[in-house]
Image 1: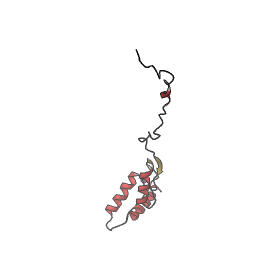
Image 2 (image 1 turned 90 degrees about the vertical axis):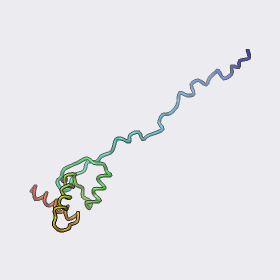
Image 3 (image 1 turned 180 degrees about the vertical axis):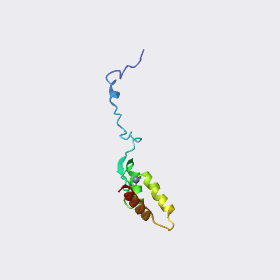
Length: 101
Ligand SMILES: [Zn+2]
C-alpha cells in the first residue's frame, strides 16, 4: 500500500509535436553550376560560379573552356619571346576566328 499514483493523467501527448526543421541546409552536395560560353571557340560548359570567376580573373574577364585554356598555355610555351597570358589569349582567339572564318 501507499503507492503514490499522482501524475497519471493528462500529459501523454506533449511530445508529439517536435519540429524537425532545425537544419535548412541539407543540400550541401548539390553544387550549383552555371552555363558559360567560351569567349574563344563558343563552346558552352557548365561550371561552378567559383571556378568561372577564378578563370575570368586570370583571363581579363574572358571565360575560356578547358580546351582553350590548354591551348593558351600551349601558346605561352611555344612562343619564342616571353609573352603575357593576355597576349597568348589574344593570339589564340584570333587563331580561332581565322580558323572558323
Ligand atoms: Zn574554347
